[in-house]
Image (cartoon, rainbow, N blue to C red):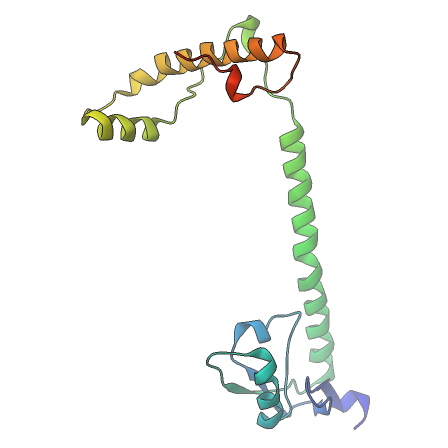
Amino acid sequence: MTEPERWRGCSVCKEPIALGAAYWVCNVSTCNRKRTGLVFCSVDCWDVHLPEARHRESWAIEKTAPRVAESVEAAKTSLRAAQTSPRAESAEKKAATRRIIAAPAPEPASGTPTEEVLIVASRLKDYVRAKAGYNTSDRALGPLSDIVRRAVDEAIQNARREGRKTVLDRDVPER
């Protein structure tokens, strides 16, 4: 069979599959991924891959190869693009993430502590409800965050006093 008449080779016996000819694929998604792309010239060849693949339940699906060589080249080109695009996008996303992570945190205005809530509201409310059966107001989060800030500031001072730049559990004051 000449090269223009050949579509692909069988994944098992390597016999050529002609343009427009019937071929078989496995119904299992791991065999049909773009990078794997297993194709078989007969059901017997499909059957040969089963012991190695160890599928629980599978069957062969009959398909027809493209009839024109140009569609083969277009399919190869789109396959190459599909294989490289996710990597490029992934690299771009990682680089963007790195830039965001590397950005310095905003400084609090004039040395005052930020008024951000440090307490996870849902966890606190669940704890109070489980412990006493009470509800918790959202306004309780601010004062509790202030208490946490004071405790953390003291823990930072304790770590600094011992010459460390890591706050450990033993630095946290017991109250």
